[in-house]
Image 1 (cartoon, rainbow, N blue to C red):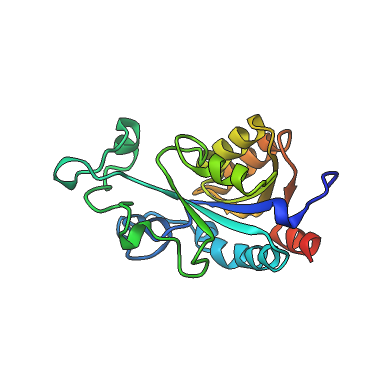
Image 2 (image 1 turned 90 degrees about the vertical axis):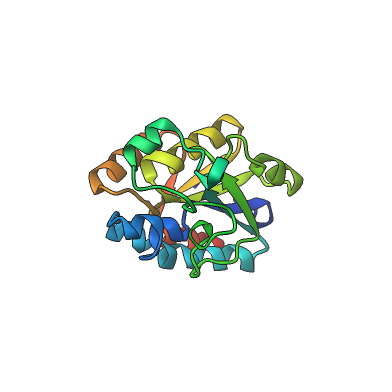
Length: 201
C-alpha cells in the first residue's frame, strides 16, 4: 500500500450491516433473502474496528434508511419496490430494531442514515469526515456491487484515499462480488481484513 495510513485521520466505514439485512427476524430474513457470505461479515470486520480504534481511528456505520411517509408507508424508490416487493411499514425505519447496526459491531462512533446507494449522497458523512480531518476511508459492507461500489467511487471523486476490504464486503452472488472487486481495483487497493489489521498493528 503506497499510501501511508495515519490511523487518527482514518475511518472504517461499513455499509448497511444492519438487522433488517442480516438478522433472521429482519426484513430480509423474514423474506428468506440472505447469503452466507453476508452473514459472515460482522465477525470478519470486527477485528478491523478494534485495531483501528486502538490506534485512535474512527468507526462509522452507514445504514440504509426508508423514511416513513404518510400512514408510515416507506418512501421507497420505484425500482427498489419492484426488486424487493416484501419491504413494507417499519422496515429500515429509523429507531426500529431492523434499522440498527448489528450487535456484533455496535455501537459505531457515528451513524449515517443512507437513503441511496452511496453513503455520501445527501448524508452528513462528508461533514463528519471534514470535521474530523479524515483523509482515508477503509470500506466494507453490503452489497459489493451496490452501496459499497457506489460509496468507493463517490469517495474517490472527493479525493479521499479509499481502501476496500475484499473479504469485508459481500454480495448475494459470489460471481457478482468477484467481478466488482476486479472493477474497483483501478479505483482503490483491495486488501483482506487480516491484512488491514496487520497494517494497523
